[in-house]
Length: 118
Length: 110
Image 1 (cartoon, chains in turn blue, yellow):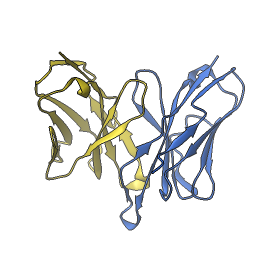
Image 2 (cartoon, chains in turn brown, green):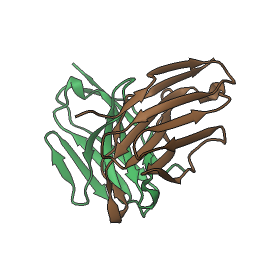
Image 3 (cartoon, rainbow over the protein chains, first blue to last red):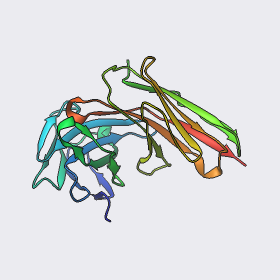
C-alpha cells in the first residue's frame, strides 16, 4: 500500500518568507509526527498529533513554527519568517496508536522535505 | 544530558565481521525501544523493535537492559549492504513521544 508522502521534496526560499510543508500519512494511522534533521545530526522531535489534536507541542523551536492536522489525515507544518537556521530536512512519520495503552506502533517515515533558506 | 546517547562511530569493519552497537537512555519510564536504519540522504526505516526478552531477526539481534538503561544491536556476518547509520529510538508513555539518538555510522568494507 501507499506509504507516507511529503511535499514538496525540496524547497528553496529566501530568508523572511513563509513556507508550508505537507504530510500525507498512511491511511488509517491516527498518530502523526514531525521531526527535523540537520545535516549530519540526529532527528529532533517537533510535534505529535493524535487524530487532529496535538497534545505535545514542546518540540516546536519557536512561535514561528506551527502545525495543524485536519480530518485526522493530512498535516501541514508552517514556518513563518524563515531563518537560515531553519534549513534542514523535515521528516513526517505516522503510526497506528494502540488505543488505551498510550503506546504507538512502529513509525513509518516519509521521504522528507529538504528546506534551504538562503 | 541527552535523552538517548549513541557512539557516533564510524565503525569500520570487514565483510563477515560481527559488530555491536550500544545505546543508553536516561528516562527510566521509557516504554518502547527500536533500532532504525538510515541510509545517506534517505529517511529512517525500522530495522527492529527491541523487546524485554531480547529478539533476533536473521543476522540481527537486539537486547534491552532496563536495569542499566541500555539497548544493544548485534550484527553478525556483516554485508556491504549493512553500511548505514543506525539510530536508537526510545519511546515514552506520555504523548507517545520518541527520542532519537544521533546515530552510529557503520562502514562495511570488502
